[in-house]
Image 1: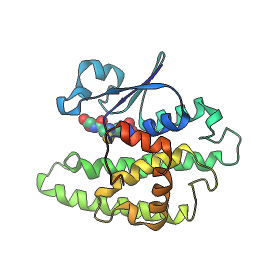
Image 2: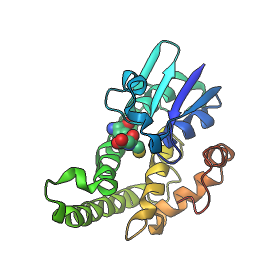
Image 3: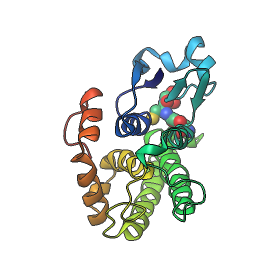
Length: 211
Ligand SMILES: N[C@@H](CCC(=O)N[C@@H](CS)C(=O)NCC(=O)O)C(=O)O
């Protein structure tokens, strides 16, 4: 049995969306961040960085959101959420997964936790403003690349689309919410109409507006 250690709306949302789209059995293990459970000795044995998510699959213990996504999408090829090695779409898929983890998810860390990125408390608002502008610029580039889509790989839905949806959701907190970008907004709406996506948000207790 697969277990996903999660907290609602956290970086675990992407692997959770993916598990439901893949249609595989899994269970959720709630990580109580309010109680600091991600820093408990038991959790640090799973992920020494004390971060959510962690995926357990039999003897495998895997952390880092993008690694979990790549692993799951490849483990269930029948769902078609990752172009197979050798498929002409595979390099673009790699690029999207890398781009989302490096350019958006990493920058969101500084948006949500700006105090970690300066030793000067007075500089915290400036750090957040600067990274907010960088994230918005990244979303604008993705919006242009996405175009009419309907998906990041064109006609083909992939795990990268679910990853982008999590970023679009996080992007609702920006001065210019990501959903206001026309192609990204339409992309999110298409995904939110999918039963597996709706079921994921419901299971996490997340309420509209979702992005
Ligand atoms: N690079 C990690 C980052 C994960 C991450 O920052 N998770 C956040 C939740 S979205 C977390 O666990 N925060 C709790 C903390 O930093 O104590 C990944 O992609 O898995």
